[in-house]
Amino acid sequence: MKLVHGEDVIIDRPVEALLSSPSSLSAMYRIITTISLALGTLVAACGSTTSSGAVGPVTFGQTAKVNYDRGVAELDDKNVDRARRYFKHVRSDYPYSRFATLAELRLADCEFQEEAYAEAAASYRRFVKLHPTHENADHAAYRRGLSFYKMIPTDWFLVPPSYERDMSATRDALRELRSFVRRFPESDYLPEATKLVRDCLTRLAQHEMYVARFYLRRGKHRAAIGRTEVVEREYADSDLVPEAMFVRGETYIDMDDRPSAQETFLAIARRFPKTAEAERAREYLRFLDVDVAAELSTHTEGDGENHDDEEP
Image 1 (cartoon, rainbow, N blue to C red):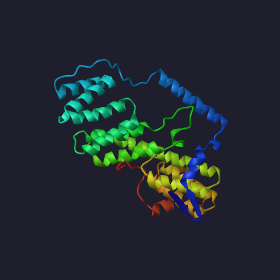
Image 2: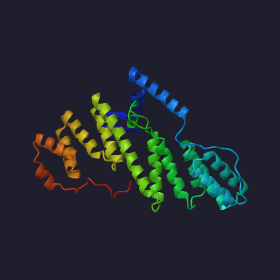
Image 3: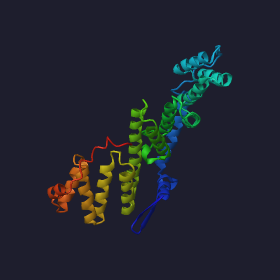
Image 4: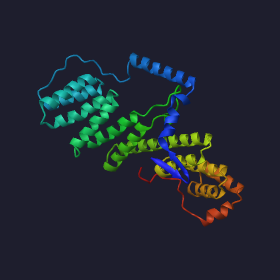
């Protein structure tokens, strides 16, 4: 994808490569990264927070339901390996039972509980594809999105913030969670999925703002403007739209493009009147000799600061 602004052509990929290339990283950053990886390995060696539990022998029951229930009980107790054996037994020995289908879903839950999120996402996708009308299809669809969300890099004091790193897991999570929201509007998982959608939007918007500021530090004004426009266009439900617009207005000031700056600052004041960015925008408008009260009274677009009624 590329954004075109006037005579400037801004291509995304080289910038991301530049941000992550070895030549752009300091020796200290490389040392910190090495330390963090070593600490992560040490923590993993000491044991995960999700235990597979003792394996040992399991006693199979006489019916699919009995074995399925035993598997669920083991999974609830975090004995994942024992639970998996019960579910596999149900799936193989009672293939035509309704519990065989449920066992498929619970096997995906086993992968999720073991934090094997990539495998779990694939298993949940397979379940929804094979059983689109199943009563637990919403569980599988939600957990698929949640699996991608769990793969988003976490913020840790030794490494850069997650919005400065690869955003592919965030984009995958947003895609799947939005799909879930559209497909299962009556699901009990809907409130939590909606919150996660907004969080993904915020993370992606933060990344765009990070790159915009990267461009500004190098004097690439039109490239920075392009990134702020991405925030407003693609992540309109995030809380960073006023900030993105304000940065764009300041960039126009730096470019000595007063008409564009005035238009941008007025838009902030109209759409987000109660934000800190709106107050600062009004200060810029006074600097530009604009009659703010007159302009706002003759151009009303409603209060756009609240987007809670919009579908994510």
